[in-house]
Image 1 (tube, rainbow, N blue to C red):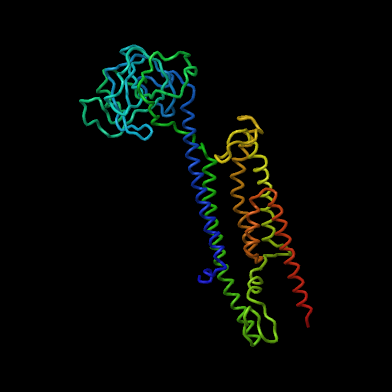
Image 2: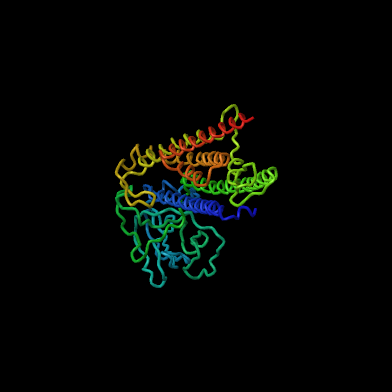
Length: 437
């Protein structure tokens, strides 16, 4: 398509490339936001009200999969001689060990629950294991079950928290789980109301939660749908560019044929600048191009491309006003930061209020719907512009104004006025041609 390499088309190519790049970047950003929302949702589950261990799992029960990360209150007696160290654990990017000491639940000889008391960079500098009784809050975790075996069973260093390895160091029954001492739960939040008598974390850094709870299937769905929309936008831009390129090549070919045919019929040649010498006045190439581009799909006096554009312009314009002037303010204007861009917002609603939930619902559901409908609007506007032979500047302004509340209606009025004026000019031209003898 050598015609498309002409300098006058470079702007269209760069615009398409820029639009695709932006949509891909925004799609990746929304995917990252989706992952962040799911991680935050999982982290929120770990801050739920702690429950007694017996209410979640018994000593002979399989691990309840829905309770991964559930804070539990455990009370019992430390088994310091059974302390082990789990290698390959990180804290702030540093490699080190988990310090694990079993806690006999209830009676001193009762079933034991391995407790990850904290993290240390070096086994030799780890504090001595605690003794006596303890009551603490910890995050419940399923034991690890990979095939990484403990190559040296003579030491107290293990490759993972696995029951088959732990049982070699404990003379009592073990729970089918382990727990990590929670460092984010205040004692006042404990259901027993008691303070820890010995949490065993002195001299250790907090261990990072290893396994997060499973989040709800639809957690962060809005961000995922927005990501999908942006990727679809990118594909839509590529489609529009391809249609434009195909139509442009065909149009340029027909322009050349029309000009050549007119020159041959007149018995003369096209002079510089498109003027043709001779007795018959021919259209310049630019005028032929515009005349050929404007092929309206009118049936019974109805301009269907214009009607489709106007319908979508009104739908998108109304939804945009509701979304931007109602949904966004109600959902976000609570005095806090917004979107990680604005450090603060006006205090229009109270956090967690019914009005804010209403605004978030509008932003979520209506925002997604508007994105899909806007693609239909772009398509209708694009095809109308191609049929009417609009120049790129007029087309781009019409498309972009569809993203601005209220201004979209001005763009629609502006486009309709131009189409009506062109139709009137075509009608007058046809009538004048018909009146000639």
